Image (cartoon, rainbow over all chains, first blue to last red; front, side, top):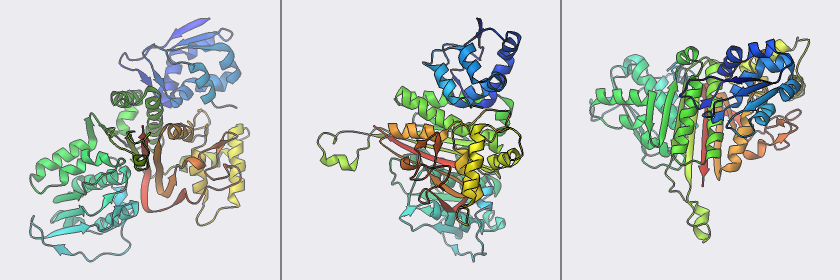
Length: 97
Length: 392
């Protein structure tokens, strides 16, 4: 498993917006996912992040879902966060093809 | 604020008015508009706009304007926020020589924020320059223990990817400081953030956000005769999110679906929207149009006007439903163009993942309920939300 600790400005405790979600994935996660297509990926949100809106989640996982599908999200992605049940919440919020 | 002039521009009086001058203490002559309606509703505000828009600019710049609403109780938050916008336009864009606005001191739980509105700065005839400055300052930014008012500029949104995250944080902190429960604060914060995000992203225009929280002093009238509930107290969380734009809600989705008609591959979600559109087209009339269909479609979960490259659609109504279930009472509606949509709880039920906006909960085959989705005399150029929640 490859672990990615996401980096945000220290003052931020909430994440919102499709565009910042998309950019965060592009800058911090995408290359790892593409270069290790068979590995499980652990995405770690800083503990101080206590609210993530749906639009951020959708922007963040946009490319992953388009490329690999929701089944790959369930199988390959592990989410570490202080927000309870975040992975299940994200799963429910992602569009199905 | 971008496009704020559109509010007057789209609500002009069709016929030129004969202006009457009244004597006043200000200048011996002034233009006065007095409302005598018991309740100052959206329609009453439209009459005021119509009157004001008929005044030539040269008159604004030469004579004091008095708007007297002391005999009327303002019906809800969105009405007085739009009144603020009108005043901003008159003062800054129309170079109004002198503007005085009198409002009634009578407020309800949903309009208590009027006490801290920038309009209060215009309720006096002295120190016009100073009052104008303070009004403008409070119009753009007004933070106090019970009020959060910000205008997020489109330019700042374009320059700073995480500006929405910062705002989300501010909203959540503001609610928690006012002892709103953690779960409820998260839900309201999410709703507001998504509305602001939609406004900035899809309308390409500045977004005005105003939240006020009332003290927990209100009692329900029906409880007063019930000993077990007589001492229960409630507070209000009142929110307005609006933007002024030539782009109305639903138009971007309509354009996207017109492009997708010819696409080889369409996701299941959008195939369903296409089927619904075909069914609804049999129902289109002068009172229910294709544009209306796309307003309703815009609120469906996982349906978005973003390009097919992007996932989207946050299911705003699902969020609202959550809040409604947690609130003791609520009054939420949206205005876009001349369309008014009230988010009544009985039309927000999910059926097979879709919201019908009708009593049958049927998005595929039935048009929205005419009681909840109707024509507005007031034309709102852009999109505006009025959300009032009463919480125990």
